[in-house]
Image 1 (cartoon, rainbow, N blue to C red):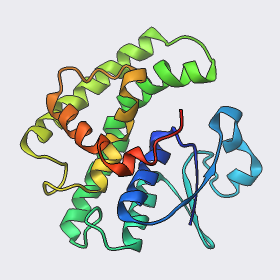
Image 2 (image 1 turned 30 degrees about the horizontal axis):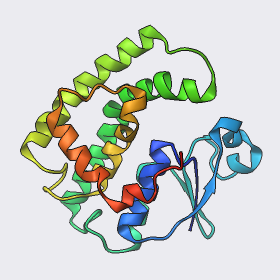
Image 3 (image 1 turned 180 degrees about the vertical axis):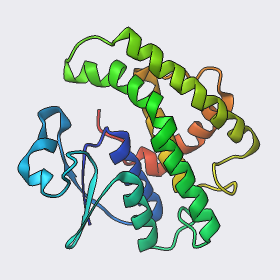
Image 4 (image 1 turned 90 degrees about the vertical axis):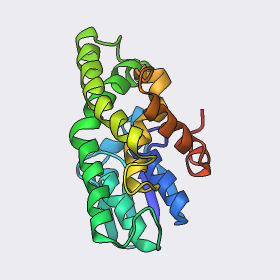
Amino acid sequence: MKLYGFPASPNTWKVRAAAHQIGVPLELEIVDLTKGAQRKPEYLALNPTGRTPTLVDGDFKLWESSAIMQYLGSKKKTPLWPDDAKARADIARWQSWHLQHWSRGTTILIFENLVKKIMGIGEPDAKALAQGTELFHQDAAMLDAHLGRHPYLVNDTLTLADFTVVAPLFHAEPAKIPLEKYGNIKRWFGAQAALPAWQETAPRR
């Protein structure tokens, strides 16, 4: 299977980390977002949204990182994507929460404080930063409370839900994501950051 993606992107990184944890090999084909490779016709033929990542498995093409992770979890038996229907629904719930809520604030902060610097497209916008910070705190409070009662997001064990939701935090320092008062999130993040799956798929600096 081949994964088209940008290694530093949280969406690409979490798919690669999950695949490593599951034990499913992926061949990485880099789509250089800094050079606009995602807008080239040959990539748009694989993924008409022009976003990354995209998985190609034979003649099957799949985009959207959560869908890709679930597909990989179905390729090989793994506790990250258990057979139990309720557990899978709970994992999908957290992945949906990530898309609809958690990613709102983290995406703004990553874009304003990190992506703009990398791309050379101007200084962070103060109004956007204020909005991103407010959204982050709204969602972080709920997440921190949940993690105060549970070591992981679903059934007290590591699943695709954790790989999904934790991914933006690997850019917390350069993106200036304000984690200081969220001890439970920091503990949970630290446990995942120690996994070889994340370390061995980390983008090269």
